[in-house]
Length: 76
Image (tube, rainbow, N blue to C red; front, side, top):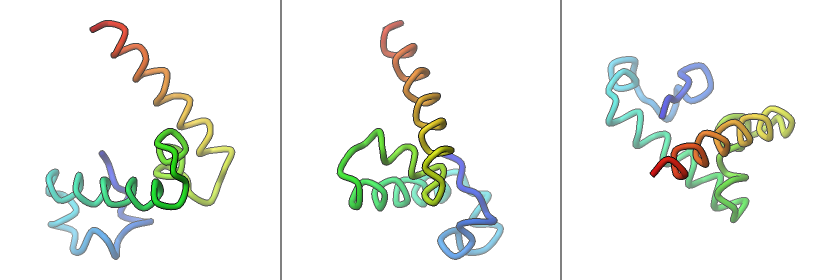
């Protein structure tokens, strides 16, 4: 996961924490979980993770992630 400093500075803490991949992943998982709590759908949550205030961008991102997920899972 990659969490944007500009939008999630308060969650990331200080810049050094933001650069820690494990901390970044925990924060990303929290964001995704928050999205799921309000949407109750994992695919909608993926879009929310990327663009919670922009449904068009969220939908586009969700489709791209879903395509990659299907490609990976079909390859075994």
